[in-house]
Image 1 (cartoon, rainbow, N blue to C red):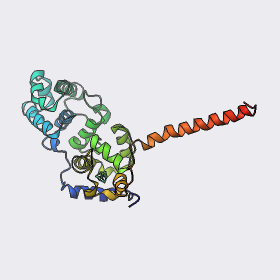
Image 2 (cartoon, protein in one colour):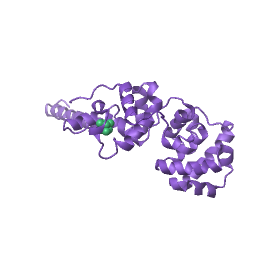
Image 3 (tube, helix red, strand yellow):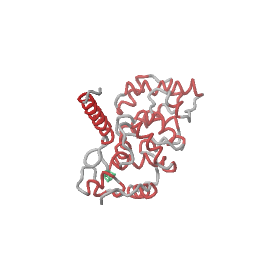
Image 4 (cartoon, protein in one colour):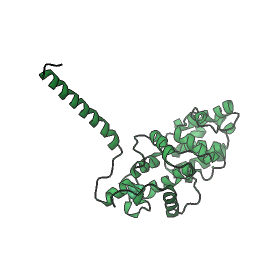
Length: 257
Ligand code: SF4
């Protein structure tokens, strides 16, 4: 192998979904709550910087006590914090989810908005959470990018980006819209199993031939780095400056500058 096979999304998604036996694209912690956009929203805020098991446990306890925005907005902070403690950062998360519940009541008539920009105005809601609400709460195509999606997209070589926001913008351009909904769950699954942050198991990977990293490692080459493209820019700038200085020195030596 020397070059990755050009990306065929149909094959890639088929192989990954067959490998992980996925028929249900929802991410684990949202399965129980996916019918309710409010619970998807709150569950996704709770999922920030924690493991799925903690999110599962906390969401189940929280929604048993406060299933909707009205109940959560009126809930005592101390009790909410106790219920979601397992997810970490529980003071901040409790503040965000209660404020979000209040804003949904006050500004959106009790209904979670279906508009990304409106979602982004809610406390604790960033691009990934907003996109999760669209995808898992409403079935509207969007590309939620978390750490797994960001890492794998760069390893595959389909993007060269430094932040999840850049990755989202790049994926929206290069992934056909019909794969936006399953993309996050399947890549999260891949990132938690084979394409792990350290030591990806490329020799077992069903999409290795499509992956720039997998192909480079198979050939004994250094895998392309995420910042190769970025590092290239200062190098080119330095070379241009060097050329400019050399020309100026020659002009001065010739008495022209
Ligand atoms: S080949 Fe390796 S780096 Fe590429 S997607 Fe598979 S596990 Fe990840």
